[in-house]
Length: 450
Image (cartoon, rainbow, N blue to C red):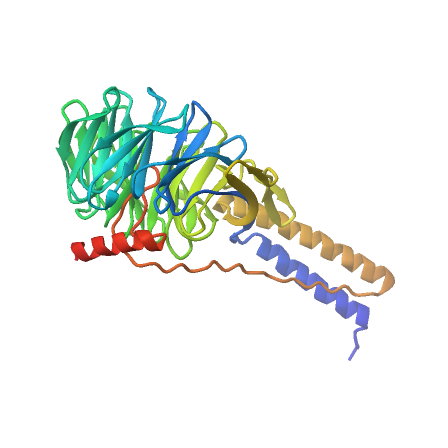
């Protein structure tokens, strides 16, 4: 028997390992990228957001501190805090008047605070139905629609008079709203009915009812495809409704507790904020209704809004009292690749006015195609290194040993009692209360529902 020498055994082992690595490189696997995220400290219990393009600002509703924080998208810092009514839950921007409408639940009564974006002050208060939640602006008629959860109707406010001009009865416990500019209709999520009421803004009457998933809580309109996306909180899905037929054309599985929605016209994607154990932000492509990316940001995610001026996504975390700001390119595109890791650049930490912006690290998952490309590139790099090692062994008779470690991040579970759904157009808050003051109100609501 011929006994192999040490260097020969080492070369053989490394060649076998090289073949194994090469094969593994072509097997698609999930690649995580580290996205640098900016967290802006706001008030207590942020749950709803609205983007103001005229001033480059994002307005954030804080349900527990009874105010609205104003974030500059150029500095990612709070520039003002505006006191509103008791327990604000929904918000919408009125481009004609440069005003922001904030729905206040008010523990039994309902009002809408009207904020001027030039002075950051409340200029009017409008009485609406009981427990107002979602708010949507209709530029075609210069009206603001407000979903009143306990009244089971939608109040229609004229922005010229700041007065209610109509009340429309819809399904059980309306929460989220989305305005369809192509058809002049308002899509209303009926939380307890599991339906969506379609309201004509010309007649202020319900013209259709669409059955969706369980506990629909948020809505977002996609003008490019003439579709409305509906977040079904307890169905773990997003329903896609065609506005031409008023029928569901797709159901996208997104995981537990989808809560907030926002449409990104630049990328043709809909962002979904999930208020669950994983607390993820998902991106759904409107071309094939598939989840393209997944960013894990933290706990207590509620509302989400898209800033078309900066191409950024703003996500509210009610447990952290922060708003996370990140690029809308959650997959491929502007993601820079370095070896086996992917990173995104962000601005450095800053402190301005009443708000503080800090940088933290979030985890991002790329799409399947990007994953394959990254794994192939990584495999080839590893194979090159191994071949170089074989050459060194052949010349010098020395062996190389490589060791790899995997690090797994674990997200913190946030268990909160399930209660009433409240929320605005692009950031409908979920049945999970952010803080003690809200928990008392929501627990009472849950008891009434049962």
